[in-house]
Length: 105
Length: 147
Image (tube, rainbow over all chains, first blue to last red; front, side):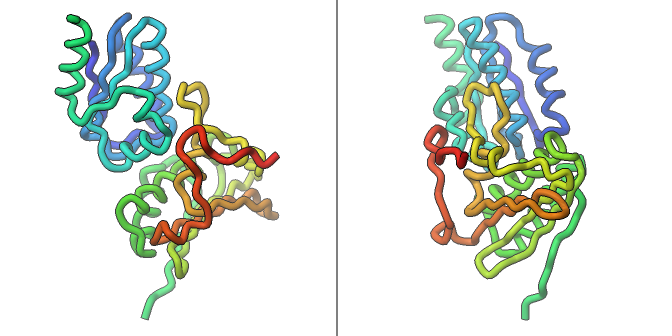
């Protein structure tokens, strides 16, 4: 699995950079856990990066897991229904434990 | 005695700065917490839309009202139409952007007017959600397109 922590603010000025980073880090068949604990702002272009990653993962039977979203980013995930569509967790540790349990079962 | 206060700034790629300005204005107009965050995100999406799909030039004005705040985003190129607003959809697969949908979902009222200066998108946010002019449902249950 790949655990990617995103901190600060993600908007149109840096979402392409985030997309490049995610693409570079993720290995084939990896689950991706986004640790959002330090993310203070997420716009629709940033959310688009997370969803694109989820599509790429789905192509090889993996998932994107969203952990520890707070405040404004958490509400964006909620109003768009993304928090229902993708597995979400209160903490990153919980997300990691869940992915590990899935892999060994 | 309350002092009238109005924000006027150009659309620019410095989105973080615009968000900060809108946050100050929203707070001054009496918004707090979730509603202030929603306003900041909605204006961010509207300005991004001008940069990406409009003429990349325009202005942001904000003024307090009795019920809350109105923020107007003007696209000098006049490229935003009612069809774009009405046709905006959330796309959970991530195949398309959905900034316009988010704006309409978060704000208490959204209106669009074609003016001599460009297309003027007005976002209304009230202090109290009970005075919302309309409510949209969650993803997938938004209103039908206007056209």
